[in-house]
Length: 205
Image (cartoon, rainbow, N blue to C red):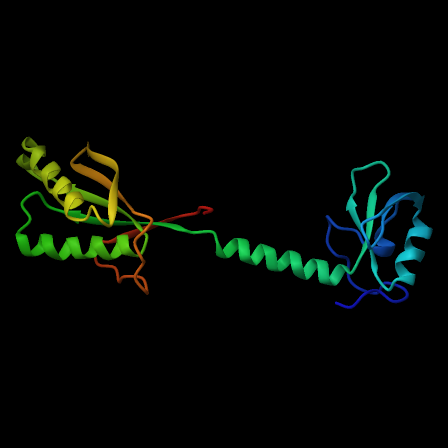
């Protein structure tokens, strides 16, 4: 967006930013293009100075009395703000919680397979909710489920740490694993399975 020349024919900058003829105050505190405070001047005079410099007059503190305006290249400033916002979004991480379920009488092959899924999730920087599902009289021996969960945490201790220890909730025992920070993530998201569920949560890192 080029600097303003003559009457401003562009659409409004938005409800929170007034520029050029959209500024309605009779007097303003003017900050020039060099950042120098020029004091309180009539709005017409401020607009004349901005026009002579082929720049825009931008209201930067609407609630001040009088409002504070600054002479700048509004198009360039807005582009820079958009780029900063884009970079900030890139540095935000989205926390994804994957769930994988075990049975207390799981055989070694199934254990190894499910452990592999948990490993990939942790390498991808996802949290993992590990659930032991008890049926019938299996609830009489919750220590078997706890043993499986703690064994899994120990097997994967280089990739994840226990965020919440095994806890019996109804007929399920749940443990949460969170990835360690210094492990390089794998490329691509691991494919889900019937017993793998994602629960996305928002966050800023």
